[in-house]
Length: 120
View 1 (cartoon, rainbow, N blue to C red):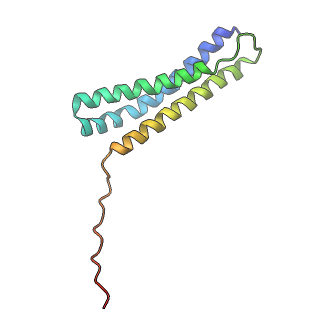
View 2: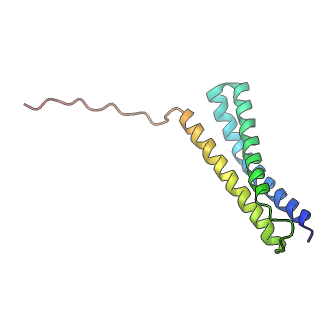
View 3: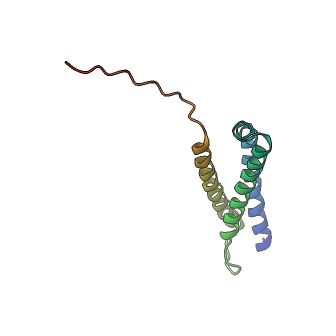
């Protein structure tokens, strides 16, 4: 199989997986961001999140391409690109999740500490 075709197949698979995850997370993320930031700002940050997740996965997949003269089976070359793309996507999701978690108000109310009575 031609090296450029293998490369395109790996990149296409990576983008497809990243777009699927973005589509899965899209609706809950848009709702949450709209509650936190208001309508237009929430839409912007949701779109920004989608672009970052896909682009980081794509960049990692592009960085993992093998040398032009390397002879290896096509399935292994595609798997390597997808693996690195998934790693990049995971890292971007972890960073985004950490940022969103800091921004989120605590959902569990803290119970008031019981009043301590001094010991006699």
